[in-house]
Amino acid sequence: MAWHGTAWHGMEWHGMTRLGMAWNSTAWHSLAWNGMAWHGMARLGMAWHGMAWNSMAWHGMAWH
Image 1 (cartoon, rainbow, N blue to C red):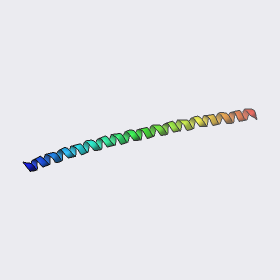
Image 2 (cartoon, helix red, strand yellow; image 1 turned 90 degrees about the vertical axis):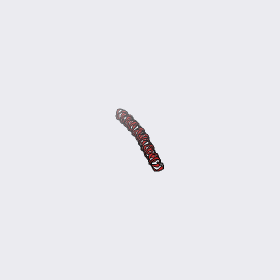
Image 3 (spheres, rainbow, N blue to C red; image 1 turned 45 degrees about the horizontal axis):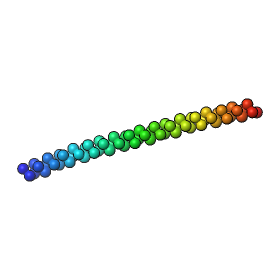
Image 4 (cartoon, one colour; image 1 turned 180 degrees about the vertical axis):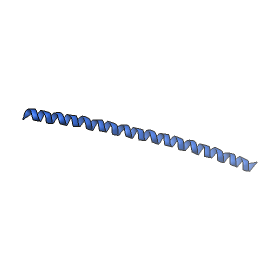
């Protein structure tokens, strides 16, 4: 009976580990998602700066 009790606790521990792993992977994916969103924002910012640079070049052409 004690051995069965130990096996049961082992199953609970594995269940906890599985839940912990799932939680960690979910948190990691959310972190990765935030990183992707941040890179997307940076990419948009770069595109916006590129547009500003183009407008500066266009004004430079108008100046010339």
